[in-house]
Image (cartoon, rainbow, N blue to C red; front, side, top):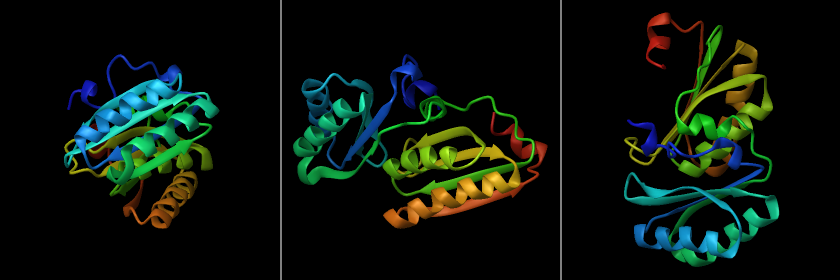
Amino acid sequence: MHYGERLGASTDPTRAEPSLALIETASVARGYEVADAVVKVSPVELLWARTVSPGHFVTLFAGEVSETDSALVRGLEVGGASVLDSILIPNVHPDLVPAIRGPRPVEVEEALGIVEFSSVASTVLAADAAIKAAHVDLIEVRLAMHLGGKGFFLLAGSTGDVEEAVGVAADLGRSRGTLIEQVVIPRATAELLEHLR
């Protein structure tokens, strides 16, 4: 998959802070309207506005906390009954957006963690929570495209830190009813790691 499909090759990760919000709609048409509305109501940066599997629309935007919050409120009003899920992360981790854009060059020296969700919003929220919870490196966040609407992320670090980060993410997914699976692989083989690059 070309990275342009993921978050946009021109997306500047530094413009995705300090606050990040996401709205997923069941209707593509309503999704376009939501994307237009969030930008009209507040000076936010529209990071991603596109269709995703399985025929949904995701609008991802960023800005100052109050501006992003206002845009989210307006987007939810416009989205109405079509809104499937939404999130607001007031203090987003700086590694999150680069990991959504494509795999980051991270060395996996001890353990690899993978957490899978049924929701795009939960994936983004849990990935942010995981990298804030422990000393881990976020490798990649995959959202919906070629995944039937699901999402997952991969992270690396010491076994204890990876277990802690994966546990935090899994608990968040359970609380939202979106966790599919969580896995920690200690000492992943070189053959597997080659496929992460």
